[in-house]
Image 1 (cartoon, rainbow, N blue to C red):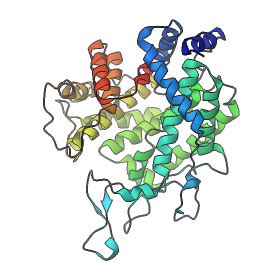
Image 2: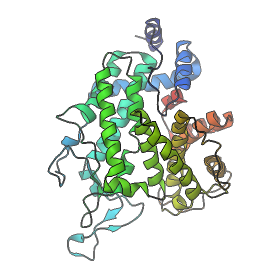
Image 3: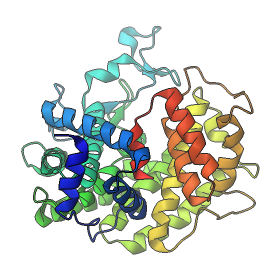
Image 4: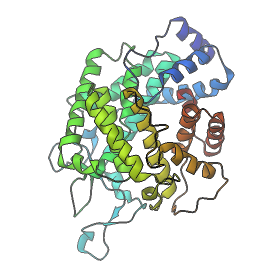
Length: 394
């Protein structure tokens, strides 16, 4: 069947608006505006929907699910349901017997980390569940909702396959520790699963009981983040780790109805803006890294995500400044480099990545009211081969 015909069928069945529950980071307004445009067959969005359908169909055909119990190694707890990963920039010390303890080589990823499958599996689960939920929202085929729901249930809910709601063994270092608070950087995108589940709420494949159980999982994980030694340790991180700690606290607190905790965390986020962004907009902690471009963009996207989450609390961080420091200034500082008006002078030992840059530009176009940013995002996406269907979410 022609995909135009599928649009007509899907929308003639009266696809519901976004579920009553609030999306955390995705924009309800943008999604519904673009779905109406898809229904009206606006040519500008046809490549995006075609790309989304292709990816979603591939995922359904593959039928792959992910679980922490699939790893071959057993965590120190003896429970495969515990998430486990190794610090990516840590290598055997050639001067020591058996290489222990490992030593750090910033920006150089040790291929050993691939022998622990949880981090890659979680990333795939997040991306696949989100893609399929968006496909269900825009196209309306229940098969997408069914597989997205199965992915989320398998990782979080099914007693046989679920992850325990902790990160006690994240980013361990051989010869030094079995787990570190810094491992929480690996769960920084889990808010995308929450938004995916919200998009599925009108589906027959995702029930209220599923949503309630998912909320309980995140409530337990949030408790672990705020009370465990590792979680408390990460709360004090002065760079992108602290930024994404806030992203997670805000996401999970808002999702589980703990607004007081979320409001308290906003004050921490304001302090992070002051400590991480200079008055001219540069981010010294990220520029000091060997992958300075990647980390600068990653951290700015984290601050943009915090600003979006703050909207749920009636707080404007988009235009907030303290001592002349703010996330808008951080964006304006980077903009000449995105436009190729300036050459990036900081250390970057690998080819620059642009997926975060493109997302930043699309968000900035909407939040700061400048369509030039969106056109620049389109240009970068065409050069760097990023998926067209991301257009549907802005």
